[in-house]
Length: 243
Image (tube, rainbow, N blue to C red; front, side):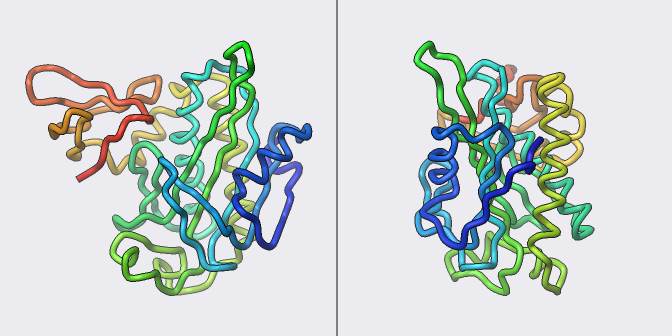
């Protein structure tokens, strides 16, 4: 289903915004919009997303799952797992997932994921537009990003064909999304745990304290040992940060 319809554009304000316009016009579930460059790309919490034309895989996917709005954030985790699958398949690169929506290689960010949900007037979930920004062919990054970001080219020492990476990613997304629709996050939970860079690490709780991430719950929440004899739950909308 995912990727049966793919819209390719050279430049766009944001693949998220452009696909939202297509969704409003009746685009089918699984439709994809990909661009060589975004002039107003955005990441989590509205942060700007930097890209140089032609060096990133920038895409958004239209999903219409029949779930509650509270389940929509789980798609960050599902998509991150699919990206890790695709990097292994297309480039033999081992990636790790930083909860909830970053994919890392050798400790540096190679991909960010942004799910944006829209609800109907009755409060039910209408659609989710899932954005993926994957660094493919960057030979370098701006100084403010260089210590935190990487690309397939930097990791492997060679260029990669974006269409091949895109094909692997759409295949992986289609597979993992089907699993999630069939059984919820519990269906992919063990695979996610196996790729996690967060479990066992220190994270900051919303109240400012540090805790240790010990598990991911069946609903996708991060379970944190708060150090006072209790376990705290963080959902993907909360501002946990890895340290």
